[in-house]
Length: 495
Image (cartoon, rainbow, N blue to C red; front, top):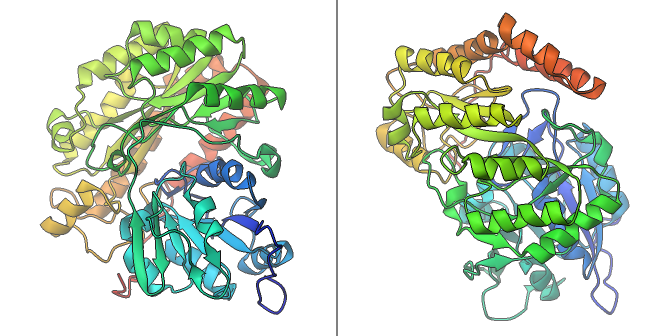
């Protein structure tokens, strides 16, 4: 848009200036991969949905990138950056943790109808039609950030008439055609690929991971979605699909040429397709990329053979969802793991010198003082290198949210959701929301302030970078336990 609030004229070949926008916010919001929350400590990773789209869109269009949240820009500062780029189209990332703030910023831009605006994020996938009804300037919603459909949508865009392309629905896109909504379903392909992301657009040295060995890292995928259906998670709603490994390795060789030595493999359950993951690991080893990496998985997917191969291929840290020490709670949320398998897998990781990050959730249905205490003690017993304690949150689109609304634990209008540091938005009956928050904070302090844990950390640092990183993150994490937020009544009954 130019200073007059008008979209610049398109060149004859319809090449557009497309702006990828991570909006400004009052906290460090992590909105990517349909799991939004605010950072608890000194970390902030790439807005990965936009990173993937940077490569896809650059095949035809001129692409710009603004991560306003990363740089702490105000609304006014971010608006000036948008104006300077003068985009023909905007693709933005949002999330349930901050979506109303994001939309307030976008409305402040006074985007003309001639400019297509496409959003992606958990809240848009969950409540897309309702939100598009409230915001007429929202042209489309991307339902799968690995999809190429935005390119097709822009091909069919007319500045005065909106989308005028093919009559066949565009896959993985919800969009307007006149006064109608059209939703293109996922085509169900088992394999997918996408062009190499535009790493040159990213301020790579500004991003941080709390458990990386190197300051600069690349985010990366070998699959998409998750074949499991845990009630508190949204990502099992997509068909699980695998990335073409030739396409994946092409990107990794590019990453290596850039001098990047670390990956965050963002697969939600690395190793779940054993043959695909094993082939990937052998290629990492045989092509001698020598990259260090972090990933996520499940304890019931890992065994000694897989973990050994992962370690040989450069894996140094694995994140696991442990959630609770109580089998009844685990069964009720369809987690499908057992505490003994957790013990065995964490012991194997220690044996193979692979660090672990354990995720725990306080306040799931059925939680009591006794089960919460058992989870805190279980965390100390399994001794992960890092522990993340969160509160149960009724995330939009999840089975847990449906149950919470049905049982009266939360309001259907509660749509600002944060499981990291904000006040719980469920009252499960067995524990108050206030008590759940207190137990979460107690868990953080008890786990991290133990002399044995502090000694293990002090003797385990492998570089000055790791020492400084852990010191900053530890102080920020402990400060988060002092945070007390009473949610404002800002739902307005609008959705």
